[in-house]
Amino acid sequence: MMSILNKIITLILVPIYFCVISPTYPVLVLFNQPKELISLSENGVGTADDPVYLTAHRGVHALAPENSLPSFEEAVNNGYYSAECDIQLTKDNKWVVIHNAEVDGRFCQYGKIADLTLEELKTFSYNWGANIWKYKDSRIPTLEEYLDVFVGTDTRPQIEIGVENYDMLYSIVEAINERNLEDQAIVLTYNLKQLKMIRELNPNIELWYLVDEMTPEIIAQAKELGDNVWLSASYDKNTEENIKLAKSEGINFSLFTVNTLEEAKTLYDMGVRYIETDILCN
Image (cartoon, rainbow, N blue to C red; front, side, top):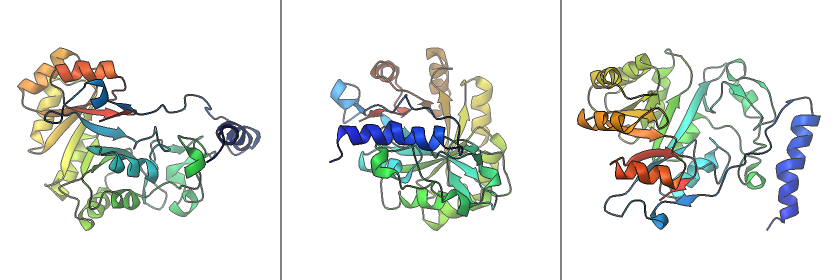
């Protein structure tokens, strides 16, 4: 087992060298490391008959670097309902799993995803994140590699489209179809036009409309997409009245990002059963 001293060297001294002293990336946030998982069931939130369904936000990045394959594998291992990822498009039109439009301090590299090829991106390894000493050789996953994690499991892949692109949406649907995940995968985006196009490409894929506040107009837009449509709404932007409105309109919804027991319990008491989280588990 790696000593505490070695962990400190890996988490602080090595990133300082490669990300601060090295010219490849000038700034790295060394603090704000992910926290340990907090169990809802052990703290009286949810029951076996009436559970909370949790989405692992960017994977379980309290246990592995966010949006890495190990973080999604941890979601499967820990029984999450779904595991959300973010996808961007490379210079050679390959979907890769990363949140920002640019490579950042997690890799001690710099550059826009759209200006880099998949081959170039695959040379970057994670240099920041939970248990990085175990996963420092991990690479940015492709969409296909991400989806492979969920084949034959009960955890649902949840794909957030992070770029305004319409020409390559078909390849997302193809990757889902090729793995027979059309009844398991979820596609979500703030872009209503993208959701409409995904629906035309495959009417069986569940769509989640990413929104800030759940309003009558937003709910109407979601319903226009047809059946099998949810709202994924900001926890901070919605009041109890918004939640009551969504429930009265019969629209399914999940709230993001909920990271404390107090928040989870309050929402549970309101009848909310689907939430997205960074550090909660069942």
